[in-house]
Length: 411
Image (cartoon, rainbow, N blue to C red; front, side, top):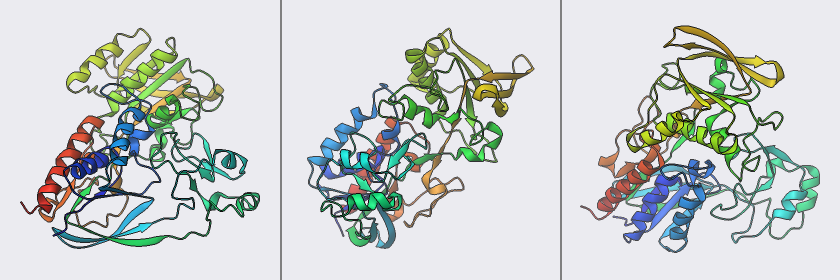
């Protein structure tokens, strides 16, 4: 039996699982498809329960990883094959080329001279990034990535001869021997382009809740200023559309658990930056589990926040790049037509495996969540199992690590 453990996914639950297993004396391999660790938490401005920035929790995790020689991080990596059985797995991993040196080099100036740009994946399309880039200041590993497909002809000339860059670097494959596997593949925001009736992709200044997180982040496209994407103006009126695609048999058939809390947090963002902005929250039900009811009560007490129980039928373009909402007020029994400077769609959490093929032999239910696998020494955690907040994701990562450790010890 192999004493090593594989963790697929470098988000908060995956990092927690890896650290816990390594600190119990086991070699751990983290396989993360993106260039940096941190997952969705890294894209947030603040997260519950303390409403602290992601650098707070992630920096602690990164320090623990740096100091533990048993943890091996493989970024820009994907599992492409798994053979064997519980206690004795051979895992094939494909490593995509980063084209930059293995040590940390500051390419800030060189990156600024390049012409080629594409929409930033990290900022969810709200900004542009260069071909040579690093998504966030506290990125781990703190290495730049060279996207050769984004380079212009002039850019190719600029980087030619740079000994520290290797545009010709190719992908390679390695094999790992592990005794247990932790699957922490996480979640992604539901594709808002599926919500055409709610203005996604067609109505200006209609954004998703995760895009608002990027606007509010000091490392985001507007350095933390919550403004309209079209003109950079402070919105005087904002509408939040709850359950955008959730609890809907045509989209996500379940409640994503965190959407209500995310909107309450966003109301607090506005209260801090723009206390006079008028906010309307259209909801079906408001869910603030456990101690979070205090946050709900705090937001309900804000004089500029109004709650309307009722579904939004559609969102259309209005004059001045505004958004026109047609909705119902279920309590008053009225149909409403209202204009807002900005609309925020509270989209749900969709498991990554709902749209991506999983090379690991584990069952996935109709919604894409992992169901089972423990009998084979494969343990899922975090939002790969169900919608969770950061705290509960970390707890599930610890549980998965303990089960994986018991497996490789043959208990």
